[in-house]
Image (cartoon, rainbow over all chains, first blue to last red; front, top):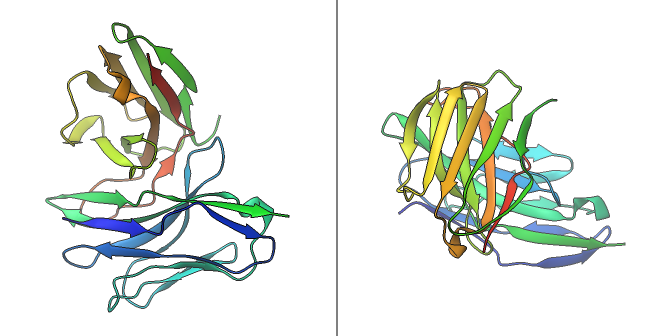
Length: 114
Length: 116
């Protein structure tokens, strides 16, 4: 079935380090892809998205490129900050029978130390 | 209030209790959702409502009963729950649900439920 696989956490980095969180997906057809972020004590917030192959989503210094050939949507940031500490979720969305389905990965917890 | 709000933020209940979770969105959206977030598991979609009509029920046990009296409010009625139902329950809303015109979902902060 359709699924999203993210790298297992937790990930711990020092401030200003480079971040990569891997995400690959399995889906029939061509889904839209998303990264959501959940800060401590809060709900999920959309971080960035890409709706077709080779699209690059970006926001707050984070980037991810929709790679159809490798079915991947890896999240990157060149220099993380302590305030980036959160749980990051990769997700895909595709039409299904007149509705649409959103499928999430398990989440990757990021801790950034000063 | 702005965005999506959920009450209560924390709830502890016994297996024989009946309780309800409330969600309210102040965004003028037409679709609302309930999700279950358990530790080390992907976020699970439970129910989807569009214009107060349930359009999706992902094989959720009947001990969870949703109610959507209007497009701004969504409830999840709980009864005779099991300890494995302990989780963070997230509500979300979006402008539309359909094969076209899906917009991003806005999430509430969740209700942390513990079943003892």
